[in-house]
Length: 325
Ligand code: ASP
Image 1 (cartoon, rainbow, N blue to C red):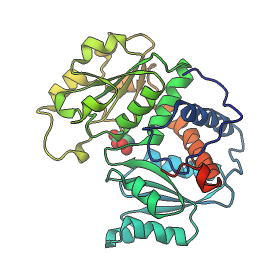
Image 2 (tube, helix red, strand yellow):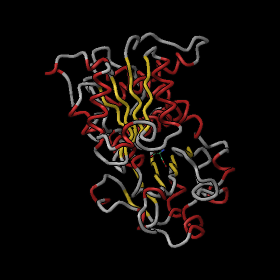
Image 3 (cartoon, protein in one colour):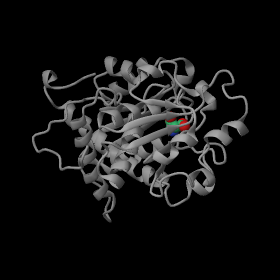
């Protein structure tokens, strides 16, 4: 995928952003080009655009979040829309109300878009089928985290221009990672070669159906990689122990300064956060010259502005010209 200006004729048709599986290269490129425009707004002294003036966005988080939640809230405000914040603990969700009922009540108050995070895979999809508002998936179980995948690839694209042919290793707890799945689908669509690296117990059971190469020996491939995307071991999503020893895990899979000596000098080091420094990544590597950790966070804002803007545009299309799934 070479960086190029968006075709003037391209029409974004997706009313919801549920996942990156099935999204075409043209859609991804259009979204990245739109995000580039919004990044420029964030560099102005008055960081506001009137694109969503009068719109109301519900931020519906059933799981904890630091970056994604605040990034969406800021993106909404930069586009001049209003935001209504909902957390499971501070709403009737904790009294047993269903996701559907909560969302329909929000809609009755005039909400135009819903950003949703939920521990169940498919929650965003379900919501999109029972309300008229646009639905944006902010992470559903182990399924997808599309805006994280988009901001990761947007960041790689800024640094490398062409995604095609890049070798990208996603390292660590793939089994419980929605970030990995979103990255895998879009990177594959854009022509990158994806390697999943980690112990067999942290690989998804259906890994053979993914367009990836699986590797259990990080040291044997690190030197060929252009990008290393390090994942956290997501203990809160793991039922029974899957790694016998954290020390052993770190010895084999952590990105340490020592291991970095084997990598290409310009390798891109990524992490979606939150980081467990000393477990999957050494602090000095996370803060080092190859790390894009904070750049990813900054880019996330522009990418989320682009997503909000585009789904709102699509919602105005006639039903037979829209993609509602
Ligand atoms: N923040 C990412 C997520 O929500 C990654 C993580 O939690 O480790 O999936």
